[in-house]
Length: 365
Image 1 (cartoon, rainbow, N blue to C red):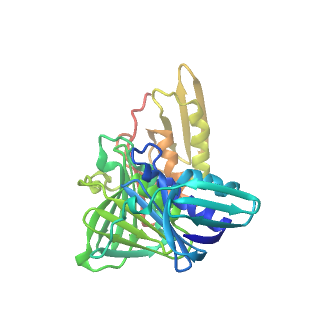
Image 2: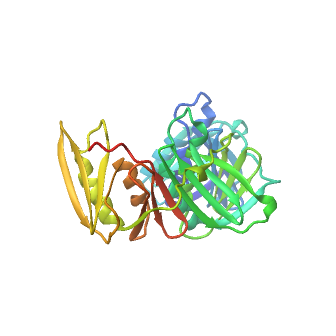
Image 3: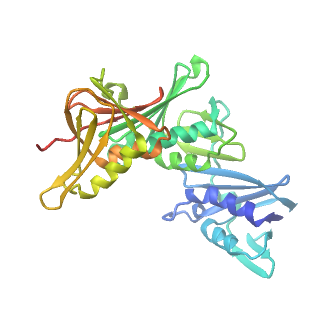
């Protein structure tokens, strides 16, 4: 195998695929990136057997072929090379010679035949939406994924394709983020799948500002085709809990808040929230909200924000980090906080397609 490629192209491609590579692998081949040069392109593939990523970049191929090289080491070498153009040739023993300006490296690889083949999606259900929309939906939900491995069905995002809409849901049992997006597909294609956290993070990284993402689903696998790159992942096997049940009914109070002002105030006040209770109180009275953190052993912080509120007085406490998480990941200037009373979950909404349910904490008077 022999090809010439620009340093920038190869570096970008390696950046896209190297996150999947497992550092703690018993199979040496899984630490490697599969390189396949043919038809004027270089195809790079990595996998940890759960998630796989393929990326293609243009290059000048003198001799077709394939090999696998240590992914992290190769990425480090390419990053440090002095010249803008790189020549790579691989002999039959999978020794790769890398030349760039005055630099020369010889790297020992492994045969491409040992590299696990990624699954095919011949008889798959297919859905399509803009990459920018997908990235936005992931951003609005992924922070609420559970990290508790004993509740493995919550260790990912539910993608529910129903009634010409994609509903994406993440929850850890104490909060829930949900976003809905119109997508056209025949009723026969309706399906619920749970995409694991690692694939969610990779997909968020791969999605660009333009172009479509085509989602293909088979029994136990999902593929996200982004044109120049392809992400394939095993699905989480299990039934996602009924998330509609935890969305509270009609709110008594709807409070419009400036997202950034609210977020920054919570951030400041939470500096004095105790690690033990880790809660911040919100006192809504006419025309204002007072945000309070206090603990006998640390001290007290208060901040008042003027708001347009004429409802009854409500004092409710939330985990400050959980309250700020959606505010950081939304782009709207204003959010609406829906409250029923001091003990019912609060709901943050923006636009018509996003909501965030947050369980209150016990208020110490």
